[in-house]
Length: 87
Image (cartoon, rainbow, N blue to C red):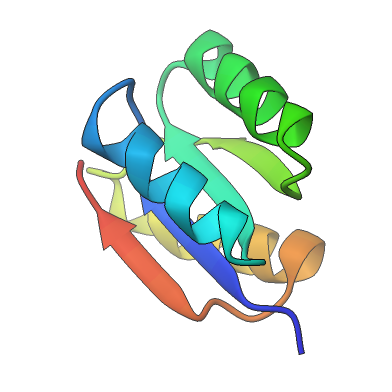
């Protein structure tokens, strides 16, 4: 079974390290933040390490958008196993 982590509020610090750590342990990684360019760069970096990753631009302060995001992550990467909330 594939395990998936959502890294909410993705950025270059702690969130990036968490994404790399879990990705290195076989998790699929969903990167979430408002900045699509930052997300694309993060996905590219993770994929270069052999990690399955996807970008999900979203304003996590919006409850409706956040609910929709969970469905999008499930559709693309499977059930969510871990949530890292750094928004």
